Length: 68
Image 1 (cartoon, rainbow, N blue to C red):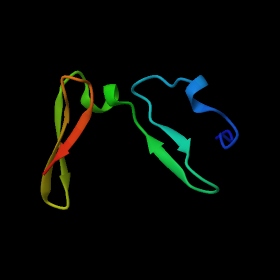
Image 2 (image 1 turned 30 degrees about the horizontal axis):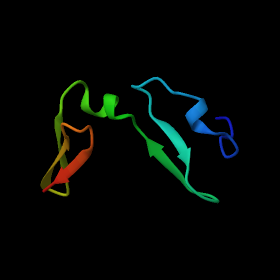
Image 3 (image 1 turned 90 degrees about the vertical axis):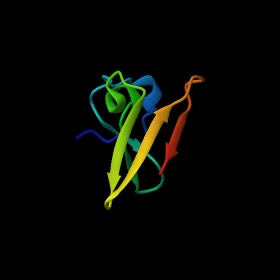
Image 4 (image 1 turned 135 degrees about the vertical axis):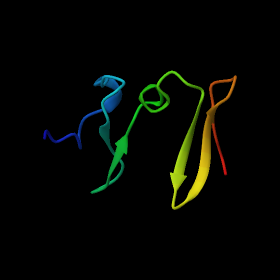
């Protein structure tokens, strides 16, 4: 895997279905997924977190809201 620690990821656009790692600090990397890949054309998805159901929604203004 190439070293992305010195690369501006905004200029290296990844395909929407392919997760990428974004540099988040001195040693930490954050796994990043596009909203298009996550939602797959829908406006709402369910997330099961430790047995609790959360709903992640795209609003009419294009923002994300997470509800339990």
